Amino acid sequence: MKPVLLLDGYIDTPTELGVPPYISATVRYIAYVLDYYGLDYEYVPVCTWRRLAHSGELKSVFPAKQYGIVIIVGGTTVPGRYLSAYPVDAKELKKIARYFRNNTKIAVGPLAVASDRGKKFVSGVSTEDWDYVVWGDVEEFFFNFFRDLTYYRPGFYECETDFSILDKVLERANTDFTRLHPFYPHVIAEIETARGCDKRPSCIYCENSIKPRKVEFRSIESVRRELELLRGGLAAIRFGKQANILAYGGEDVGKAVYRPNPDAVSKLYEAAHDLKFEVIHSDNANPLTFKLFPAEAVKALEAIATYNTPYDTLALGIEDVSEKVVKMCNLKVGKEDALKVVAMIQEHGKGKIYAGINVLLGLPFQTTESLNELLDFLKELTQYKVRRINIRQVQVVKGSVLARLVEAKRLKIAKLKKNVIHSFRERVRKEIDLVLIKKVFPAGTIFDAVVEKETKEGSFARFLGSYPPVIFIPQKGLGFLAKVRVEIVDHTPRALVGKVVELL
Image 1 (tube, rainbow, N blue to C red):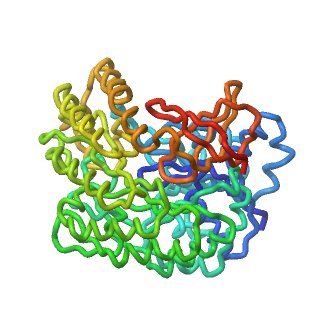
Image 2: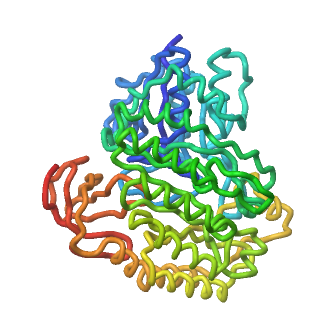
Image 3: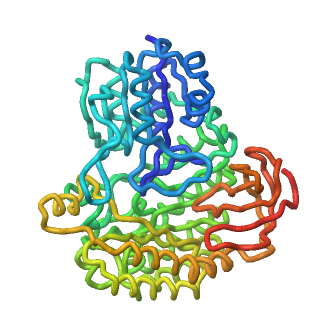
């Protein structure tokens, strides 16, 4: 069998990040399956692909006839702003499909999911260009596919399974391929801890809202096994591939969210701490968990703060605080409860964990008045140390209640005027963001960072972790991936200005 080409096109979803310096769980799981069957494969980041395509060296380095099966992983359901690497886009996917026209081609990840901003459903790939399009728990598809190449007929496959296949392939897995990551050794691995969302009913815009999947927690033994593998080459991890880190190992007691299990959360982070990872960070947490189970949530938070590393962030899906929008869109908490959650994180995070606030624009029932209410809430955050406010546009994701209602013309995406949205964003940036970033990273703060981009004006760096701010260093020639110790000397609403105090 000819070698398999595993092309990492980078993933960005609410529960998984694989854009450098991150490496996604999805691309790792496929590599683990290939290891399990002892197959020869090449891991190629799309950054490398782009560079060779630009220089005209693609055919000499990666001739299509050299490979039998070509797998591309990538796409985004919540596109963000990227510093030096970005997910594969639709035009690139077309070009890649044409380049490998005679190969068996498999497209994997959010690029397989149809979504847009409410006008019509579009997808980055189709089965006209790709033989197989796969979404979901991808290790199930590849475990069956490489066991028997005739197991699946060409088409679209949405996979849902527990962690048993992952546990099986981990027995023979290695992570040598991560050394080919474009940011190696400055790479942070996204770690999966659970599948499904513990919130019932689901938020209206969520792909989990029509057919909620069973919540499955990954065992501590499984997580530890993968962490041991990764520690052989990587020093940074984030427990980010789950809907709510506070729910890990929790119990369904008939409430809207699971009751936290602080002991389970503690063991999870302790496993990473024992392996001496230099960065141990987190991502998603449901503010409703704090509201319904404050004592247990605080204990879980304190457990995280015992074993994590500084500048960790719990991203809270607040979305909106208007009473009507919260109720009609099945959101989590209102204004007062949201402020209490932020205060709890600041009080019990031991100075190592900050709240991050996610806001969505375009939700049904949002109005100019509700945006003003949301803005007032965000202004009140300036009394706390909040890491960042993330403002995004709601997307109509196939599989969500919102998508079904929009298709049936029973509900509309809020059509806020462009000047209203622009004014809202500008006021957040100027009146709120600058205050917040100065509180978390005051002038004189010193930490280590990695240079990710260089321009005529200077260098841009970030530290490894959750939601690292961009640091502009007015110094050229430091070099891509240079590790530097910087001191913060100035601020902008979304970035820092630093000076190098030591080359590491």
